[in-house]
Length: 265
Image 1: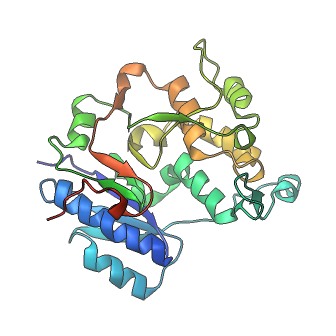
Image 2: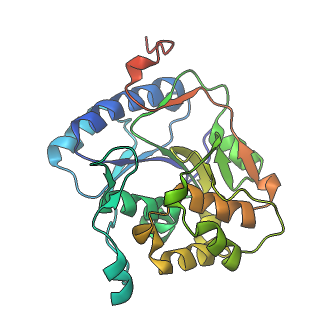
Image 3: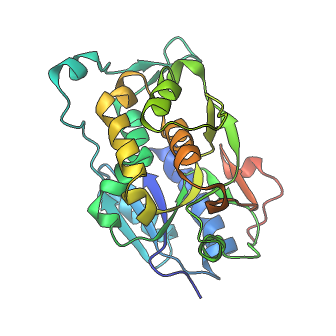
């Protein structure tokens, strides 16, 4: 039995390395999860070729959908638009930068997804990246774990973000959603995997929290990412008992063949 109105979501593009990793991610998902729990898989995209769709279809489960997402700037004032750099400088290489597309992705996962009418009837959504790999047979359905606990957010781990891409975020979050908790200013969830209750994120108080974040333009100006935005919002607005730390056989990053213990046979 699967939990109704729940799905897995990938954000996909035409890049060869992305598609190679996505192929392996889907193989893992089918072998270790979807064969037992046949949830639909949604492939969100900004616009991909018919050839890319054909490649994805070959690896996707039968129950899948393609959905074009809206990666455009909100209707900001001229003052905000003039502050948005076309490329936000990265720290790891002299030529590295965060593209406008990357920042659109940050906005989408921070709260834009929940404004998309396509997801209006979705209860639980699991995010996977192209290089997210379920590496062994799941002993329980993580969607059912969420449902049984009436959970709002399920995650795998936490880490710290870099100071230069969260400048001012903590103070702004404290202004719009004050808390007596001692929160770490640079903490974030590992958002290459999460399961969220879309119904909750579509409504207040998170809806208002995200809207206030969005209005600043700082997702684009300062590269505030979805991971720290989500962390600050969830820790301030979600009761602790509604959070579930999931323990799953899972790896993230790079090509599948670097994980020698994964057996797809």
